[in-house]
Amino acid sequence: MRRVAELDGLRGVAVVLVVAGHLITGIGPYPRPGFGDLGGDLFQWADSAGVQLFFALSGYLITSLLLRELGAAGSLDLRGFWIRRLRRLYPPLIAVCMAYLVVMLLLPWTRGHDWTGVAWAGLGDIGLALTYTGNVAWLWVPRSGWLGHTWSLAVEEQFYLLWPLVVLAVVGRFRPRALVPVIAAGTLFTIAARSLVPESVVEAGLRWDALLVGALVAVLGWRTPRSLTVAALAAFAVLCVVDLPIENVFYSVTAACAALIVGGAHHLHWLTNGVLVHLGHISYGLYLWHVFVLRFAPPWWTAVPLSLGAAELSHRLIERRFMANPPPLRRPKEIDLRERSLHPGRRAVPR
Image (cartoon, rainbow, N blue to C red; front, side):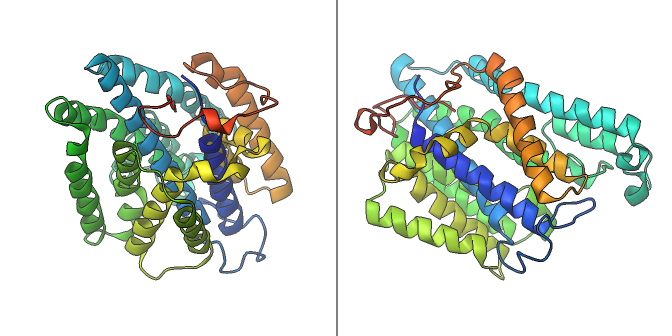
């Protein structure tokens, strides 16, 4: 199954937004902006917008794979699907958790006792990360916060666990378009639930609407017109900069914009830039390790190369060993954009 350079490049954009946002705003448990006061009140939402883009991409790609398998085989190998997801995502996560365990053994101040009052609170972080419950169970489990960014992995893994069951149940009895009202109901439920819960729960839990609208693009085979793609990209860029007073609106609008961008990525040929594509290839490791590096509050000129180096090592030494379809280590000299499609029924698009 072939990869699509535009989508890898879009993933690269997403991880750049996340890293830049964290550098500008700082990150706990000892937040210190990597650029000092340079960012001011700008780009306060870049990291959240980047995560929304990640979610929309994931919803699109996973749904594309599921629909393609159903169309070809008439059924889903759920066990195989879940094993492939774990093989792809779990080994790098274990590496980060092991690194944090070593850090806790060597540096007592990283264990979380000073700000939680619980000895070895960091063990709670490791437990939440490895069980993919960091978006919910943190409400009850003492934790240091060092692996708090794994909440987004929990959101995705829970989606990967439940969504194939929904797709199989609906598409197995009806046509793929029957998923549309299911997606609409799930999206509306997520938006409504966000307005009823505390802000902290919204940030770390109720984000399925971005995954679902990405899935909608796959179900409809939607190809966003060029003009609408550019408009969605411009709106998304503005949302990375300005501070909307209502978080629910921010999450909903960025999710919609991200889905439109995914559907129109074939118009954005600059996404095939080699740097962006490679950043997309190493984006998972970069997401995991840049936060870990920033916990030590280094200056940005140290944090960036350290994070990139750790992500590159993770990609080459760990991730590629378990990928079903690893990307080439070197970018092909030529990419024929006309031979590939971003939508189900034409060409395979793996995660």
